[in-house]
Length: 292
Image 1: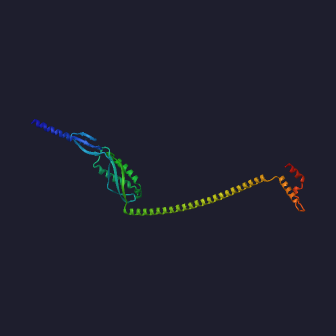
Image 2: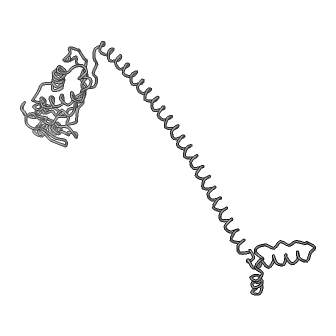
Image 3: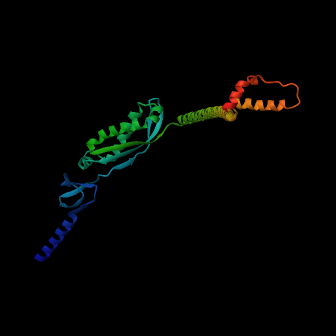
């Protein structure tokens, strides 16, 4: 009988030990209550708790959580109703505060996001809302992060996923965008024509310059050719005169030849002899002949 009781107690102890073993995965924290009161929190790894007095109050993930909340109707400063879809990125930094600081924290964050968004958009016009997305994101992140800090939550990022203005505003915006596109197209077309005209004028200018330079170059080459030809001609004439001077007989030889010619003429039948003035001085001629 006693052996049976011991066996039963042993089985119960083993069962309690098995139930008390807790294997906690990475990036998770278990909040443990003892007799209904916060006791401790268990990080990732193997832990053993007393299953009779201790219980897991909440399993908290430390990973960043992304919540895409339903679009909220908000009214702008100029009384236009817009539907804005918000995405909030947050992370739990204190599991104890997250467990005991607020009831249904996700719902609380959603409601807080809606009220914060209405407050911010209420100070902006439609145009400002559509063009100030980054500013709105930054303001919302700061406001939500400050408000959720007592809950053990850190808001990392807030993004306005979509901003949908009223139908009449969308129609007006589409018309404005169409007019702007047409305006830009006309401006681009005018700029293209202007640039084309400039390019054509530049091309004609360059062609005229090149033509003038080519004509100038031709004239220069022609002038240089004529100058060279004239120089060569003068040089040839100079060389010819030089050679002629070198090959001409001396004055005495010319006079002697003239005397011989005169002698031949005297031996002929002519009755008159014309003596050149150069031969009148026979003495000087004879002297010259002797010197030769």
